[in-house]
Image 1: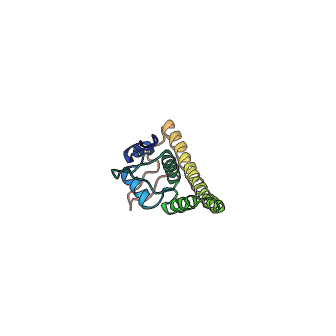
Image 2: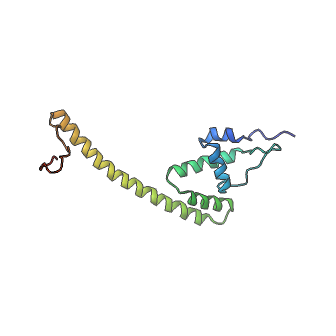
Image 3: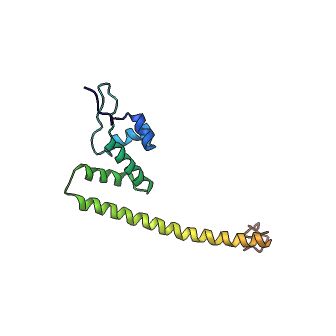
Length: 145
């Protein structure tokens, strides 16, 4: 009997997800998958479409800064099946708050940077940028903007 056509090797999954084979093995060791990854008769890992989709979600959550420990807890909750949706929701809401705070912090930083860009641009265009925020050697008094 032949294997289903949606089976993929670790190399194929690495290409599809952007994760290296070492990362995939790490995910397996850390029990971040929703099921144990089966092996072929030759001992090679055999992933299916649902595994790839889960990994893509994990990648997205990791790219938002979700810690591995939180991702692991989320995987445990999903793996255990229905009945813990409130816990899953709470975990995701907490992470959402964390990401929103990071966005707020980055937005404030971006505003400072943008103000400096506007100031520098005006001075460069006006030809008044020489010495703008230049350090002064200690002991020589005075300073620049």
